[in-house]
Amino acid sequence: MSESKTIAGPLTGQCLCGAVKVAARNVNPEYHACHCGMCRRWNGGPSMAISAQEAVFEGEDSITAYDSSEWAQRAFCKHCGTNLYYHLKPTGEKYLWSGLFDDQSQFKMAGEIYIDHKPAGYAFAGDHPRMTEDEFLKSIGMK
Figure 1 (tube, rainbow, N blue to C red):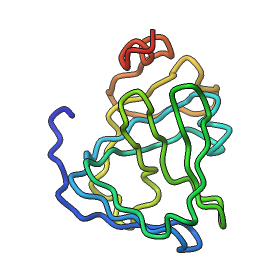
Figure 2 (cartoon, rainbow, N blue to C red; figure 1 turned 180 degrees about the vertical axis):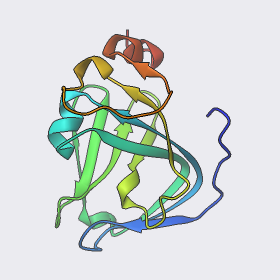
Figure 3 (tube, rainbow, N blue to C red; figure 1 turned 45 degrees about the horizontal axis):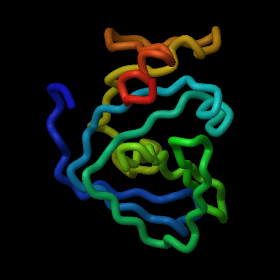
Figure 4 (tube, rainbow, N blue to C red; figure 1 turned 90 degrees about the horizontal axis):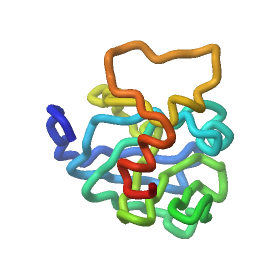
């Protein structure tokens, strides 16, 4: 976390159908946009997720997760299909989709990853770090 302050919370949110609810505490308001092919296929565009030291889900029986790679798991509501989180298995961290939350006013873009996979046609404004696939994988110890 850089200069941003942690949001004590709880920040609350839910999936589209309301079967899964989340309450997050000690939230890092900085998110990274991921342009990898899996995220774009899963979301229809880049993913934007935040991290929290604590995330409590209600309706866990409505959550389906699958291993999308050796080192990552993706979870969604089995009823409405809303993407819920991305679990980075090597670190145990879960990144919660920013769109789940009722109040996103304190969130801000801190960077972009897989920038070398970003298709033409859109670009995010701002002066923030942009990491290639190789740079990102090295940063999490995967290369």
